[in-house]
Image (tube, rainbow, N blue to C red):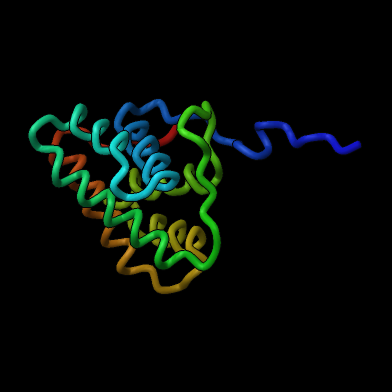
Length: 144
């Protein structure tokens, strides 16, 4: 008989306290599970940003495509209904929260997440997503 690992081992991080980080997390989960053109992710961003939803939606799609293209392995994403986060989700939210204040930290985290040394293109995608959210009055805060 094998025992299942506790949820805190597989999903060690609590959901972020920042509403904007939760929006990003939900969009990541929906697009990661259902594709870049997922209606649920689009609806969330329409509701969050109103008539200015196009920029964050397009940039989120671009970030997700860049992550998928440049990752050397699988990036674990939990289901949308999950009340905790995977290490990869936690790292991605930390990258987006710190990209402007601690760019070298964000670069190292992204390099670890992707398993690659050269992450400049994906890092640029993360910068524009964080900037789009901040420009719309929804800065992505630390996860916790």
